[in-house]
Length: 117
Length: 117
Image (cartoon, rainbow over all chains, first blue to last red):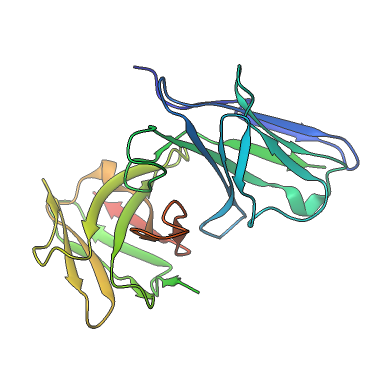
C-alpha cells in the first residue's frame, strides 16, 4: 500500500507566480489535511478536506491560498501571486474514513519544499 | 488555545547512551492525544510514539518511551541505546481526542538531536 504521495518535492517560483502543490492520499483514505512548516518552526495546520468539501480552513491565510480535494484526482493546494514569505515546506496528511477525522491515524507525505525567489 | 513548548532547541547524545527530550503543553481539555514525531534530513514526518491522555501507563516503542505527567502537563521522550539513525529533529504534538478540532495537530518548535559516534 503506497503511502501519501506529494509532488513536486521541490518547487521554485518567482514572486507573483502561482504554485500548485499536489497530494495523493493513501489508498482508501478520504480525509486530507495540509500543514505548513516555516523555517525554524513546527508544522501548523492549514486546512482539512474531505472529497469535494472543505471542512475547516481556519489555518489558511485569507488571501491567495486555496485548497480542493475533487471527487477524482489528488488534493491541490494553490498559492496565487507567491511572495517570499510563502517559502516553506508544505505537508499533506491523510486518514481513513472509519471513525471520522482523526489525528491518531494521520499519515504524512514527504512534503513539498517551496522556494520563492 | 492549545500550545506545545519544547524548551530544548538542540540536544546531543553519545551513541549507545540515553537522552531525554522535554515537552510541555497547555490545554483545558481532559481527553487528548500526545505524539512525538521524528523528522530526519529527508524531512519526512515519522510518528515515533503516541500517548492517550486517559491511559496512565506510559507508552513504549522499542527503545523509545515517554514519561507522561498529566497533572504537570509534561510529556518527555526517552531514547535508550541511541543510534546514529536517531539523529533528527523531534517534534512534540498535541491533539484533542474529541470535539470540533480533534483532527488538528498542534506542534512544538522541535528539538534537534545530534548523535555523536
